[in-house]
Amino acid sequence: MKILTVTGYKPMEMNIFKPDDERIQFIKEAMRKRIIALIEEGLEWILVSGQMGVELWTAETVMGLKDLYDINLGLIPPFEGQASRWPEQLQQVYEELTVTADFCQPLYRGGYKGPYQFKARDKWLISKSDACLILLDEEYQGSTQFFYKEASQTANYPIFTVTPSDIQDVVEEIRMQDPAYWE
Picture 1 (cartoon, rainbow, N blue to C red):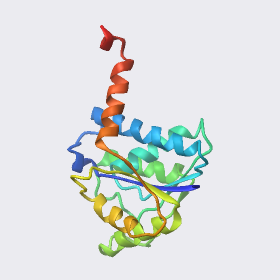
Picture 2 (picture 1 turned 90 degrees about the horizontal axis):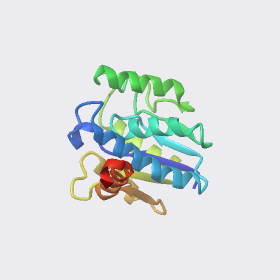
Picture 3 (picture 1 turned 60 degrees about the horizontal axis):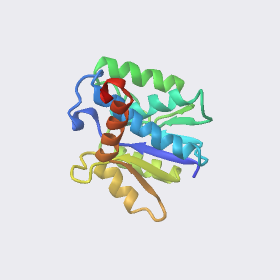
């Protein structure tokens, strides 16, 4: 596997409303661990559409791995100006990633025209990648259900997941690294 699409929830779907919410570090670490394992098996590219939440956090994580690993980031938003209505801090993160990603190009010229752009984005990302990694809670699929459904209907397309249980494992690992935990 050389190319992996990564997606997951938007922050509000996880009740995350502040950019300094400590849960973000746990999500990033869970994604980082899975991505490193895949890089060590030959992964070369990670594709995201750049939506806020898991995709932006993963993109930031990938950019942080570039010093240690030969990994590339492709940012493929469904249309131009995707972040125009986002909170300003998220717009800044998004804009920085559009400049620093190894490849960045929207699927459609111009702004939002309709939900078909999101369906086209999902189909395109699946067609251009060998597998996907989704932050997914089976009991609450939220916006990930659309990508997951499309990926599930694609023959010979592996779907890897990071679950709430995986994130809880990371929380415990990080807590156990704190010497005060053992006192």
